[in-house]
Image (tube, rainbow, N blue to C red):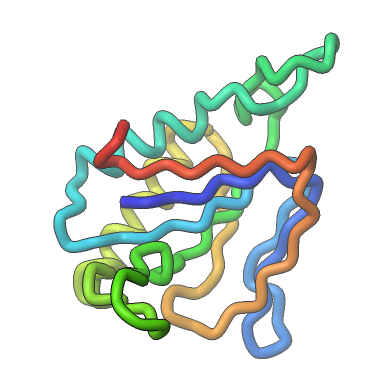
Length: 149
């Protein structure tokens, strides 16, 4: 499982000109799922995300988590995080899970983030052509692969 975590002052997802998820100060998470991912990956990643100390404290030091700052979460599925660019110029997405595997894992991640953070989690629409808008705060962008955690 792979995630791009961006600290944002605002972010939203639009599908067919309708906003499906929108947050203010918080985290935009782009999530890629592969067939080898398990419930353990979900547990590790959701815990890591909500406890990441990437928000500034009063001294301007990144020392606070999303829970500490009462921030919001927007989760967006993104199969392209498993792009393989080793051969040629057209990426292969063979490692990305098909919807039959990825959708239940995505839904479990939503539930895990809700439980870990104690907050509602905004989302995009799995598999849709989404337009993601964000204002990256910092900028702060973190990449996590559960195979490396």
